[in-house]
Image 1: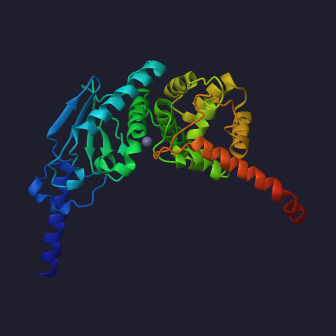
Image 2 (image 1 turned 90 degrees about the vertical axis):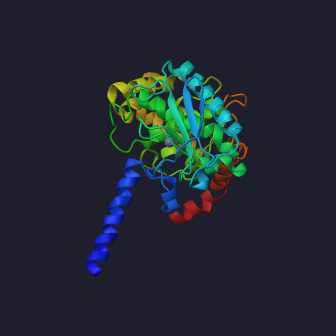
Image 3 (image 1 turned 180 degrees about the vertical axis):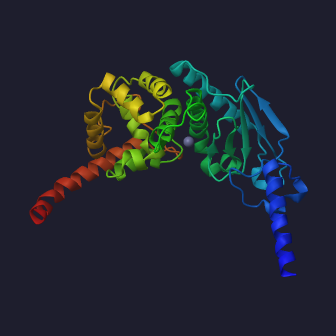
Length: 324
Ligand SMILES: [Zn+2]
């Protein structure tokens, strides 16, 4: 009896998994789907908005109410953000973001996922969190998250994950440059950490730990905190990635061509993390970067560095005596 009950439970689990995998679960059977992850089933979408480069799909009748978006203006506005990012990427990179084989537009869907956005796998749609999109408190994430997820599609157009996979760790450049794109397109980021974490934790290993918090490095790389940024370097970097299939080698090539030895460049950046990273001319294009709530994060980093260098000066003498 026990065995048969266990057997029935296993069969039920297998059946549920099969249903989830094939995406055939009907709305009436969705009592299980209260907490979902990105890989879980996609609801049917009764609404659709098509623009030059995107097909946006959303629902207001989901079996899972957190998928619902009532106000179509939110979708229209997001479509405009995506088109604007597309145009800026075309201008700088001269290359369109990746579209799935046989498609000439990027599919964008809105549903309840456990992060703000996803653009993985390359052939899949861009997914945005419907809950974060309708929540007034997180309204500020819509612009930067749109640019960020579309930038992943641009990375795929350079072969990342579609033709080559870089050696790990690689998020310092895949997530780091996608975070840079938020600033390049909108002058803002979806999470404060993307700007301030590298400066708060100056010992954090950039290549192993930074991921999207590597963003300031990419501003440093294109001299975005100087009077004349060289955003073309980002294009050169991705062209080198496409050729070399490796972010480290690509970075080394572009840096050495532009600035000289890579070690010196990385050392200078490590120093800049500790002292006055944003001390450049005040009319630099990246002089102000907003957080999702509209706070100027560059001013915050400047304050932080002022405080840290102040406290280093104030405490260095007695500590040096004690330590050495
Ligand atoms: Zn990302």
